Length: 105
Image 1 (cartoon, rainbow, N blue to C red):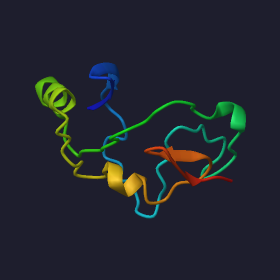
Image 2 (image 1 turned 180 degrees about the horizontal axis):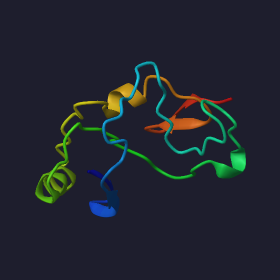
Image 3 (image 1 turned 180 degrees about the vertical axis):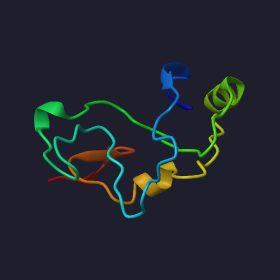
């Protein structure tokens, strides 16, 4: 099962995503930008403008209570697959982290 939350509210969920498939190593996670081709084809008009924080990926589905507890008590557990501090290491484009411009193309 896959499920995506925004501000403690489930915005999309489903089953059957890549059942039996494998995700090979060496890939890239893209947050806030539509890819028109694998690893590229980015258009400024398709970029997300806003705030993103605490993106974590788990290999299991968290309960709604776990998600609400993390959001309400500001105690975010690290994802088992990917976690927020990893995403912040390799940024591209104009990214502002905590008021400091980190990278600008």
